[in-house]
Length: 349
Ligand SMILES: Cc1cc2nc3c(=O)[nH]c(=O)nc-3n(C[C@H](O)[C@H](O)[C@H](O)COP(=O)(O)OP(=O)(O)OC[C@H]3O[C@@H](n4cnc5c(N)ncnc54)[C@H](O)[C@@H]3O)c2cc1C
Image 1 (tube, protein in one colour):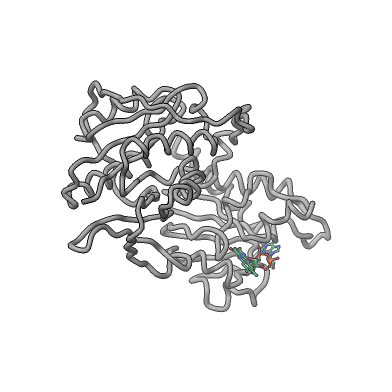
Image 2 (tube, rainbow, N blue to C red):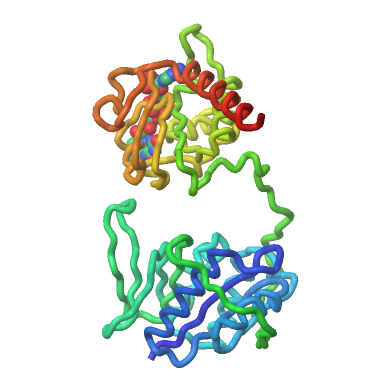
């Protein structure tokens, strides 16, 4: 018989994130399919009562909480101590949690410390006569495997977006407090959080279009000069007008490390490809990008592919795109922006 523990941490506003509610739905379904005698919830945060109340109608067993100022921020030492205290109280065999950056940082190390095992990036969990198993993608989402493990406790981090979020009534939950054994003063002090401005949020998984920028945007153009500030303006204007998601080649996001002129709003999170992401959008448009295999492999799930490149012999032209425009992307995108602006003003009037 498995004993299940679900772990969660409230966000800054005291509520549970969508990814947490999705993982909670998966945990509840697993518990029902395993006929587990009890599934408990462990909460870690500055104050966990509001989060506990929000899931009071989910039919959980015990709710255990580790709370206090030292648990407000994500920190390996304090989070590990908090989870260890909850695990000691519940003695679970299966520990499920959402793949938040906070839990992803702490769970594998903690599993090792407790003599257990950990699977990250789990896309689904189910059970049959042989017990629970998790579903994971391997080799950059080319192979899907189902994994069973004998080792316990088994920590399982569930990726967001793989199941619907649970909907349950709020109520007044009873939280059993446990205290974590914090050994000595913490060496990590969280002084604040730096986040990009809302307008700089260019990764939009739900967008209909993926707009990819390549290193060509920062290269010398026909006049022998680079035009990085103009490239920034054109790209941001297009992304904001079209609500496209912004992707990039590796060469472009790597340029900052080489001290070259870069597009300030790009980070490695925008990188598409073998060592980047594999986004899913109905359409994709690559600009100033050569279309080499390590990049285009990240386009596996893009429905219709188009590219604008000066090079008629680029990778896109060799069968990787449905349509290739052999043209200057600066000129094309400038004109596209004009057309979008005209369409917007027509709609407004
Ligand atoms: C192990 C490994 C893993 C890798 N993983 C990745 C990965 O995950 N993602 C990734 O992207 N790459 C990856 N790469 C790198 C990849 O092989 C390429 O080097 C990279 O994608 C090239 O980037 P790019 O096309 O932007 O730049 P470039 O190759 O420099 O191409 C720039 C293009 O812009 C065009 N251009 C210039 N000016 C204009 C203009 N005005 N209008 C139109 N076109 C113009 C040029 O003709 C040229 O074709 C990996 C490489 C290795 C070895």
